[in-house]
Image (cartoon, rainbow, N blue to C red; front, side):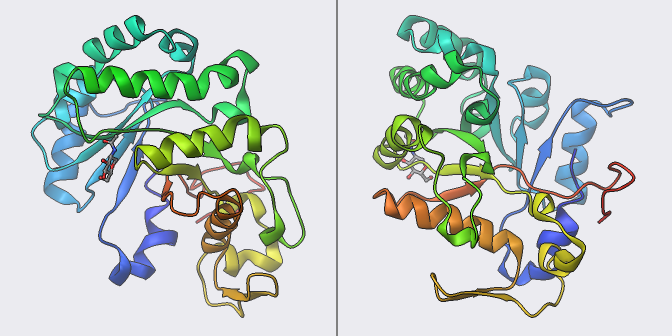
Amino acid sequence: MSFCFLSPIFVQHLSAVYSVGVNYGTLGNNLPPPTQVAQFFKDKTTIDRINIFDVNPDILRAFSGTRIFVAVTVPNGEIPNLVNIKYARRWAGNNIKPFYPQNKINYILVGNEVLHWGPQNLIDNLVSAMKTLHIALIRYGIQGVNVTTAHSLGILESSQPLSLAKFRPGWDKGDLAPMLQFLHETKSPFMVNPYPYFGYSPEQANFALFKPNSGLHDKYTKQTYTNMFDLLIDVVHIYMKKMGYGDVEIAVGDSGWASAGKTFEPKC
Ligand SMILES: *[C@@H]1O[C@H](CO)[C@@H](O)[C@H](O)[C@H]1NC(C)=O
């Protein structure tokens, strides 16, 4: 569970926050059972949305009937199967329908950072799987659930300044344009996982960590950015707009800062 991102990113901006989400990962030792996690979130926190990296029924049952929105993830390996409508219906019937509407499932993420990690047959089937799953949900009468997928910022080519970054050639027209078209049609957000951490350098520590700093003026966007997070999100938006999809919302999938990373890594 990455709680760490709550402190650097959100606490100082609390006045602007109306929603706090965490990723509830299950790779770890001595994890408390889902019922205990759900109870803790409900009683002791204002967390109102979680993201899980699968469709774990125990977690979904634990959050059933609570105020907490849940984003679930289709495992990457299911992507090629999901382009088949019969399979997609069965998948939705087994994994989503039993929890709808008692669980406030707001997003179904089709795979995780698929463009970044591949392999190619997942990349090639991604948009098609998203579309088919969307149709399967509608046939079940499951409404208002956004089908999207989370991208690492590896979708961007590195550039100097960052605001001139483009989506990687090949992915831009081949994968991201049809995906953005689908998201536009279904009013679903484009989801990214911005890690201010990866751009870290000691000189930019304050900028990366939301601490007071002199800001970064960008002569192309004519904006002064006061933190890396805003800059990263704006860079994505600038290029979405260039592709004609400036109206598609951006959602943040995960972000954070290692609380116990490698010894050379900065701590939050
Ligand atoms: C996605 O979510 C938005 C905002 O809640 C909603 O307006 C839209 O209808 C949803 N899309 C689908 C396909 O349910």
